[in-house]
Image 1 (spheres, helix red, strand yellow):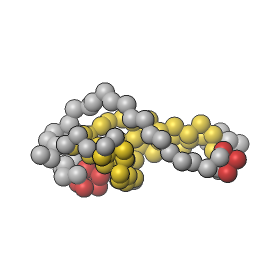
Image 2 (cartoon, helix red, strand yellow):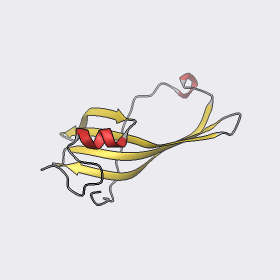
Image 3 (tube, one colour):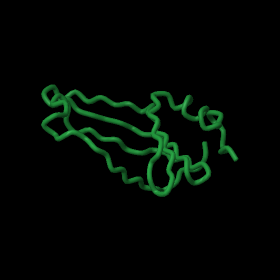
Image 4 (cartoon, helix red, strand yellow):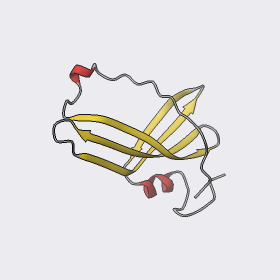
Length: 103
């Protein structure tokens, strides 16, 4: 895999007020695990999502998530959520297990 980069992304989103969100979940976390930067404007981020049930305390995790961002003039112009990391890599032209990013 390409080397891991120490980057931080800050995203501004428009979410509905907390009173309109699902009340079944508590402690949702989306933690970046690995970044792939292509030509400085396309970024693929492997993400580890976790959430806990508000009443049951049941913890759920999803490690196979990948988020793809295209950035122009400092703004995200395209966002794609992948449930399959290998598919995300293939879409940016990287063979899973490869150490080479597309040129």
